[in-house]
Image (cartoon, rainbow over all chains, first blue to last red; front, side, top):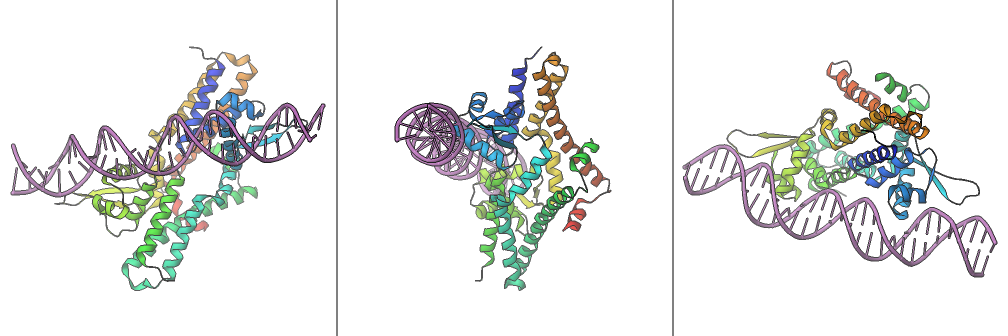
Length: 175
Length: 175
DNA sequence: TACTATGTTTAGTAAATACTAAATATAGTA
DNA sequence: TACTATATTTAGTATTTACTAAACATAGTA
């Protein structure tokens, strides 16, 4: 069976859509990234409409999300009023960007809320109550875990920035 | 302001629900885990119904998902026909379990599909076509990235199993 | 200024998903 | 066997979320 390039590319885009869905993101996001990733040149919004089958509105908002997490970059050509979009090809850069972006997210709001819970428990009056103590210990353990993960993030980002380690090379060497 | 234990616990469970939602999971899952995590003793299905406000049906299915990824354990007492559920408190164990479980998921199906795309491209007839070449390179780069992440997973799991490293201690030391 | 090409927002719809209520299955016990 | 206590499945509903179509905004150009 010989498969033509266009079909292959469509399958690829479809796979990225499903991966996107798996992570709880709109499948359109995966599709947009997929199309851009396989395009040798940056694409305009209208070209994305054509190639993804989504509408301008949808692409407008989803491309913004993609740009926010660093998976897509927006650019414009001189003397051309269109915006152009292209995929980030350095996935490690994208991961770092995502980790940085995370700060403002709902996720971190919830994590901060756990930290506040812990403060209240620690300052609290119920220290003689065994139930209170138990809750305190459990919440503290979860907070420690969050902190540990956070430390790892920060450490890796920092060490890489300083040039002490190169995650890409380490991962490559492990293969 | 003094806050009573019950309110504190409810806030905590609410935070876990939101974290759950953030990761694209039902918020009920987070709530169930939260309630179990704050309970000194394993809870029965009916007790979970009472404390989460969900119905038996919902809890039945979601507790199974939680058990599948190793965040919750099911047990039964002798001479008691109820099942009892308790939270995994070793989050590192849970992460390892999740990484292992991942194999059968939709996510890996999609990732495998990318690998197949790559094979087709590599075996393909279009090697003289520059577009074909470009697509091949891009898909290969993404596949390399997936492989790298996978290698890291496997390496960490293996090294830890062998006792050469202790992720928990490393993370702890980084704080 | 009016016109055109573009991007964004909005209001509504379609689709997916979580969840409920009730029927069904299962297994222990009399 | 029938009965009881439990868990699971199912069919339907409510909610959420992605997406569409169209109105609107913006900025460049004649």
